[in-house]
Length: 220
Image (cartoon, rainbow, N blue to C red; front, side):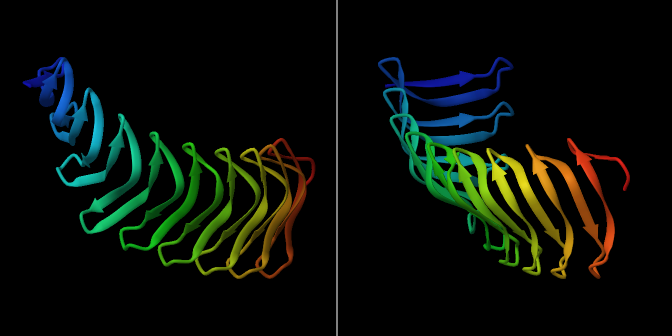
């Protein structure tokens, strides 16, 4: 085994550890361009293996998990600090897979979602810090699809409509936090089109008119 140090072009330490037969082997510590420790863990024949730590710029642990054959594998967890989890989920061959969760600093859940081969797939639910649902819908191959609902923080519905290949399509409705209708109309490829109506909170019509490619046209 030969102890080795590697440096950036400006002379700051980049990495330190041992080599075996010309490849990183055993315990290594990596540093960012500012000279701050960024990662530490073990190599086996040049590939990251076993449990690794990732660090914040001020030295606290940022994330912790396992590598297998140089790729993230199994359960990983990220931290705001050592007592506060920021995210958790699994990797397979370096790609996110299965259910992932992110959290607010008060430990309440922020997002629950599913991945397949590093792309969002399946039900996606986000939450307000008070625990109320913020949005709920579905992803397919990383794109929003099917019907999505969004809510105000008081749990009243905010919007309802459909996505196709990550673009808003068809009829959409928006609501005030009182639950009364705020506006309604259609989207095509993410742009407002056709006839739209806007309402006052008391239900009276505020304005109405046509949209073409996301812009108001004609008389309003």
